[in-house]
Amino acid sequence: MTGATPAETAHDHDHGDDCACGHDHGPAKPFDTAALISARGLTLMRGDRLILDHVDVDIHPREIVTLIGPNGSGKTSLVRALLGVQELTGGEISRVERLKVGYVPQRFDIDRALPMTVARFLSLGHKAPPSALSAVLAEVGAERCFGQQLSELSGGELQRVLLARALVANPELLVLDEPVRGVDYTGEADLYALIGNLRDKRGIGVLLVSHDLHVVMAQSDRVLCLNGHICCSGVPETVAQHPEYMRLFGPETARAFGVYRHHHDHAHGLDGRELRGAHDHGHSHGDAL
Amino acid sequence: MIEPFLLRALAAGIGLAIIAAPLGAILVWNRMAYFGETVAQASLVGVALGLLLNIDVTLSVIVTTLAVASLLIVLGRQKLVPLDAILGLTHHGTLALGVIATALIAGPSVDLMGYLFGDVFAVTEGDLWLIYGGGAVVLTVMAWLWQPLLRVAVHEELASAEGVPSRRVRAAFIVVLALTIAIAMKIVGVLLAIAFLIVPIVAARPFAATPEGLVVTAATVGAASVALGLAFSSNVDAPGGPSIVLCMALIAGVSLAISSRR
Image 1 (cartoon, rainbow over the protein chains, first blue to last red):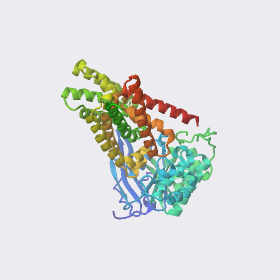
Image 2 (cartoon, rainbow over the protein chains, first blue to last red; image 1 turned 45 degrees about the horizontal axis):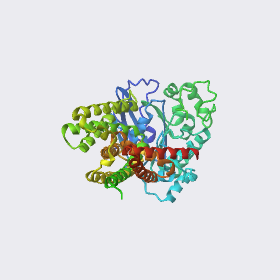
Image 3 (tube, chains in turn red, yellow; image 1 turned 90 degrees about the horizontal axis):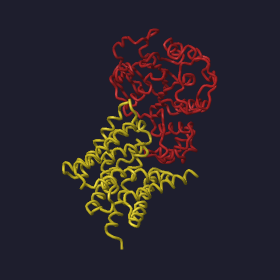
Image 4 (cartoon, rainbow over the protein chains, first blue to last red; image 1 turned 135 degrees about the vertical axis):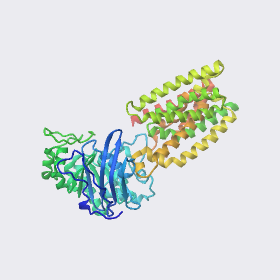
């Protein structure tokens, strides 16, 4: 672990216009010692499908890294690999010693036959006094959920409770897999603002997985665009200009990015579907909830 | 004065109700009810195997149950056919094999109905030792595995990401489940064994606010059903095991009806 690469140059193989991935990966870069977690050459084969192709990722303290990519681009596999629950075909991951990771999974469908209050859920596997649990709930704006059953929460409340659970053990790195699932649009903006605040207050690193480009990008320090391999990466503006990004997400969305940093050019119904969407976005909003 | 055979039946049934509750909860929370049903009914093959090899039927049932559970886990990994279809296939295939094998191997002298539906009034003192000894082992392991099992039931991936060895925890649970099925077979037979695990949980669900509260309430419902069922059975001369399970099902039905009106 020598030769730390600064964040700016940890710019995972950037191919320019041509990205047909007959590319040369070159010699492996050393781990980034300034990073909380540093992954090199992560490769995953499932059958004969290449899910992850020599992916390099670094996440630093106080940094929000957003991982974007179309459906099936390997986002969740990459997250699972970084969490250490995905066996890999190749590559290596270096973590800061005893790195504490808080994780918010993409889907959370608790069986209604399992009665459990929010307080109990937060303390599962952690020995925390009730005051600490209320404090972390207050931090995410869900203090009134303390005694409620998990199955009774709304989509937005559940996401906040999941975030609280991820924060209970005071993690240094927060990993959020599509944290705005099942949340309406104002709730979504609030949730991203909350994540930004948590980073500022707690000084944690954040890895955010998203299919929703506009809002996320405004909050991010760095964006990784994944499609099996890292297509392009950098500050949001750089990625938005990148031809590979435009190819993946469609020129319409890519052009819209600069303008629509804080609002959307289309309304969404409560089910998350676009109400007025004649134009092609090229990105998916996932399952309607 | 209660007859000794009735006391033994009562002790056996109540013991099983207590052992079954935590396992039933885990099965229901993980949506594994049909999985449990399948491995339980497949254990009839274990009965046949025990008779054929002239070894202890309890032992051969445990081994067979584990083998079928492993087979299901392996078959469940393929993506072509959904798991419930695999379970249906295994369930009926092994049940048919078990009935044929038991009938052919032992001839008409073997009490097939006894294995299918149990014979709670024929419980011996030796059986009681098995139920309470085996039950103590089951409950000890369950107490030890409870927190990780709960975390896996809440969210398996989250639990894994937080360092719970989910696969090993599940594997250990299936071993305990096999032991419980072997115990339950003595009392309610292979066809009704899983009812002892699942039905009290359903009955107790509307009245529980915590996972442990659900388990305790379910154990109480199970024990009460045993007492009611045996009373009914000895009064009208109905089969014991089915009478107990019928009581459980009636309580569960009433309980769900009450909760849906609230």
